[in-house]
Image (cartoon, rainbow, N blue to C red; front, side, top):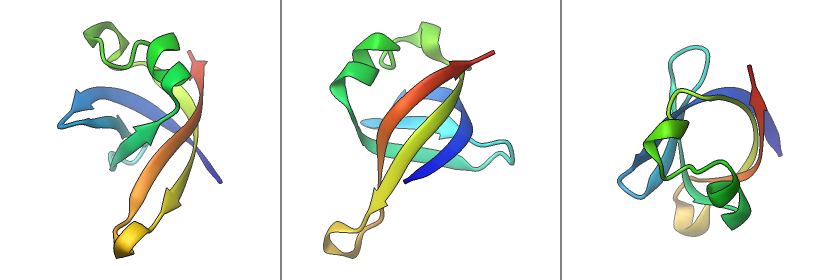
Length: 75
């Protein structure tokens, strides 16, 4: 499992999009349902919030897929 400080950019093209401190886009195809509702990740008001994100990467069919496991808001 990986952990990284990420800034939320929104729900775009069925992906939860974040940016790291170097400006690299990190796109999550899947997330725990409670994270989506608790942090309102499908709503505009969550954009630009900073989170400590825990996630893992799988390779189904050889395709790199990021899966969001946990979020902790940071100020």
